[in-house]
Length: 364
Image (cartoon, rainbow, N blue to C red):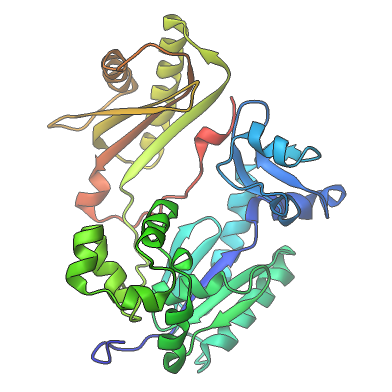
């Protein structure tokens, strides 16, 4: 651990199966049952209740696969307005303790409580109070991780889920990380974990035995990250003013599309929707990306960047059609998406938080 860097008190709060828990709270008949938010005939699962997770149902899983794993699974349509409403209540509770709140999505955030509004010395106590208030005001449970940096707090919040919390004390960090399986390290995905396993890297202590040069050779720029975090080093501060870097709209279709006219209609609708979202938030951008997911789940993306900002739905649509013409092959399409990046928010440094709503997971 780097003793030259100031030790902070960081909390990571993560709601438990947020979307699914909201639905079970609002609809008592769903409590105790295996439910999935989203999905339906052609979509993918956005969130699964803990009852559904016991059968292997996970977010981003195609609904067909989820139904095969859990035949009695109940699909529930999403209610974004409701999720946002509750998220705002939860956020207000955070701000009772600190203004240093970095939301990651509707259902999780980092809090820096090193200096807090209530003058509470114990970050563990603050996390407990926050979780109790969330339950009292929303009827939902949250889990929390507490430690000296964001990486450790994020890892810790997953240890005692659901409805629990875990503190990684400074003098326990080294031993905790050495015994932590590498696939539990935040930032190590399934592909990277499998690569580590093939290299006989199973726990933190195995990762720690590798030199910086070795890890950089094996994992590129990420090697430095792995070298640092296994030693408890992670200097990223809680950033309350997250800069929005992209805006996206996507749709999964009830039936696969192959007709050119239908494709054009969908692209035009997406262009209008994207323009409305951007206009509402006074956002402009220069780079448009078309996303195509085919019937066989293969994915194609292609982007076009302008010198000046896009200014209208018509410009999005005409560019989207040109990008469509660049697709590598003709196959039936199950999803189309448009996203805009290189935004003016990056230049203006506006206070803007992008909520992670997975538009592709729900049908029209």
